Amino acid sequence: QVQLVESGGGLVQPGGSLRLSCTVSEIIFSTDVMGWYRQVSGKERELVARLSSGGNTNYADSVKGRFTIARYNAERTVYLQMNSLKPEDTAVYYCSLHRFRDYWGQGTQVTVSS
Image (cartoon, rainbow, N blue to C red):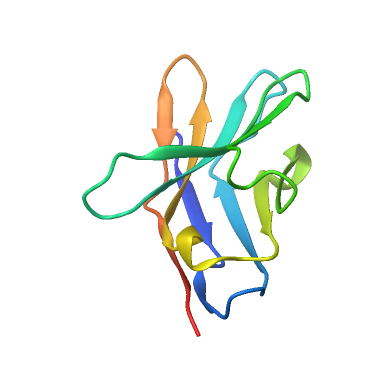
């Protein structure tokens, strides 16, 4: 059973930065699709960024140019670098791995507020 653990969330002021980390319990294969999603209470979970096996990336329009997803297979870790944070980025952020099925972490809270 693949397990994912997120870390790095917290409280940050608007315009600030955070880096989220997702550590996977086993080797990340090059064919795995890694992603970050977020969810606000009462709303559906939405894609933030996704990194496919070919190195292709997809970002939500709302985060393009501000967020960057990166994976380090040898470290079994996927990062989400978030810059120029806005209050509307406040959400619980989830890491996902797709390998024949979807695996999810427990989520980490990100709050952007002055």
